[in-house]
View 1 (cartoon, rainbow, N blue to C red):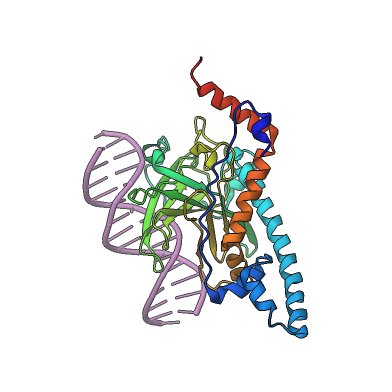
View 2: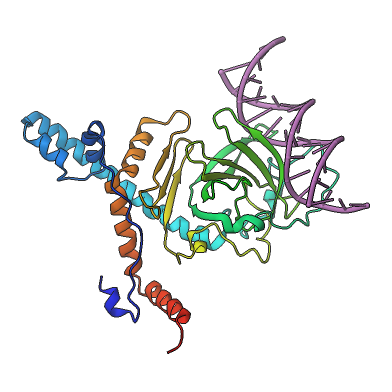
Amino acid sequence: MDTARRSPVCLDLMVGLPMVREPSPARCAGMRADAGIVGSACGRAASTTMTNGEAKILEAKFTEVSEENRRLTEMIGYLYANNQNFARQGPEGEGEQPASTAASPTSPVGKKRGRESMETSDSGDANSDKKINMVEAEHVDVKSPLSNGTCRRIKVKRVCTRIDPSDTSLVVKDGYQWRKYGQKVTRDNPSPRAYFRCAFAPSCPVKKKVQRSAEDSSVVEATYEGEHNHPRPTGASELPSCAAQGGGSVPCSISINSSGPTITLDLTKNGGGVQVVEAGEAQPDLKKVCREVASPEFRAALVEQMARALTGDRKFTDALAAAILRKLPDY
DNA sequence: CTCATTTGACCTGGG
DNA sequence: TCCCAGGTCAAATGA
């Protein structure tokens, strides 16, 4: 990369290209084609015995998956932009929330706890150093019924965080103060789910559910419901971004969540940290997208694209070089 | 004594 | 109506 020549300090992004696992033969034909990758061994083997009709079908399918691939690329770009935004603003995009949302239907009513002092310290402080990796998630709006029969949309956001598996605290540090009000073991996951409320403002309707992934105990999934109706507490510097883990603004990992499957792409982990956690009844299209995103080729391409985008960003490389130079002893 | 967390009981909605 | 599972409450507990 020519960045090394431009910059006073050679910049070599150790993105950690994931180990490419050999796909199973069964997935070979479908998945590789779905990912829009041509020239694979599978493709060559298939082409030798292909008739005209099959070729046309495959061509049509290829066009279709190419289009899908393009949409996926756009989606990745969108997620990347979201990730940057997330790192700047925090998980809920606080500070822009109108006060009217204080009367959200999710705000606890009825029986009230006697002690309502909200002078808690951030419960994540003690364990924040155990956080290893935090990945971006997607906003999902769900409708919440109001008492008058209408529906109001509540912002739901899911964030996957990689933590030390020995850490049982279920604390996801996001810059806000949370009060735990319950814990429950759910049916589909042996790990308990912890329930938190925003402790900064009594009227804040935001709730958070935190639960370890059933697939990987080192991954905790935090689900935020609602939007904060107050600014981020002062002094809350930790952000759920990979930037906090010493990687600058590098989007070291991406998580795509929807109401169906949860995909975690951990591109920094050797051997590849891709998980496809299929929750509930995933739609066939969604499953297909999951398979595409999980493919080694896709991941490799994604890493390459991100590395290219970052190293091509003069501002980023200069800032990084400057930061490194500051750390070097004076000669 | 104060306060956050724990945890069993209770509530509620969906099937 | 009953059952089940998720969500919430609040007394107990411990720091």
